[in-house]
Image (cartoon, rainbow, N blue to C red; front, side, top):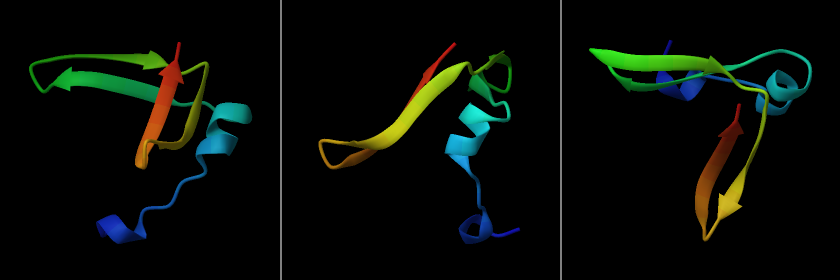
Length: 52
């Protein structure tokens, strides 16, 4: 799959499905379930906020 072919429904994921967020690097990382969040534009930059 090419990068420009990736499609997702972030609002459906937060509302009806589930989502995971992972942070770190390959040697040290952590994942957690997302309970809610938001996506939009802030100061002309795309922004996603995730709360657990």
